[in-house]
Length: 417
Image (tube, rainbow, N blue to C red; front, side, top):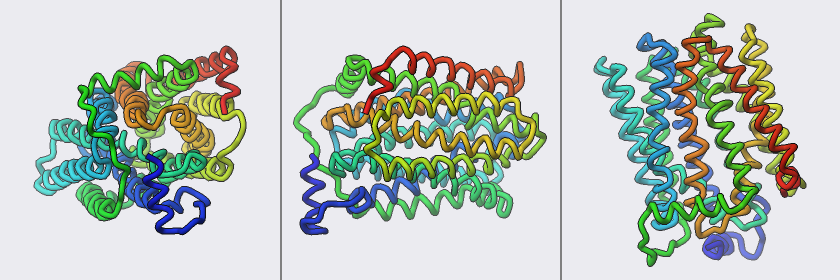
């Protein structure tokens, strides 16, 4: 399959080998589309929480349920979507999923303009938004190793992480500014414009041909990913740590902290945008480091230590009463998170055969994004009992214990390249 991308590359740049993944035209188109698409994806999660807490006067339990409804489709769809990514044209799958998300955002905008957007509508639209994103995410990840040479895989993964963090830097602050200036109608109007622009980039994307001769059931094909992961101790530990981060640290930082900002720091919950922005700056810095030094030794140990640092920072975040100190902690969290995100995904993809890449990436996204709404729902309930700050600290402590255990107990992971 790499031969297809190599052919496209040679036709555009002669015999010269690409110096980085962005030198490959089709990867560059995918990267630009991902940058815009992930802007909207990050904006969706932030805007839904802000809308529920401030726009509709909800509490942290309602906020947690709304984020849960936004993410729960991943748990039911993403594995089948991963199998589809190995079966049908990747560009077509990207186009259809993005059109679906555009329709959901447009309906939200219309209901806001009519003054008829209720909490019930937020839950329904969150589900449809989650469905659209669930069908598009696996193919976005699976195409990366298919469009670039193997030697540029870590570079491409780091660039993709950089696109994700750049979208985080831009999305939350821009959504906050847009909301302050134009209300929630402006927030969703901006998302409509971004999605339309991203569809234009997809028109020129060429993806490798897929083998359509195999007609096995989607669930049967998805099982190959589970068997591949369960048969390799390295992948089992990598996925375990990914699951721990998703259900505890990620849910606490991305969702429960927003309730802490409002209830314990007595600030507008929209101020969470500034925390997410500085965290994204930190992730961008370490993503650039990984991008330039993709051949680092013992990547497994580095990403474990990064998770230890991040977990410790989350433990401290929960007990912090200063917004300025939270800005510092979120920046440091970003520095640790950049190593974790790029190295975890890169190590998983480097040990996965390309013919089942879509299915394994479906499993990856199921764990990464499918578990986070479950965590958000549970943490929202727990926060109503013991306070959001205490819940955040408990999540950081649990994550620190588990990653420390894997670091000490599995030397094969520490030495993984």
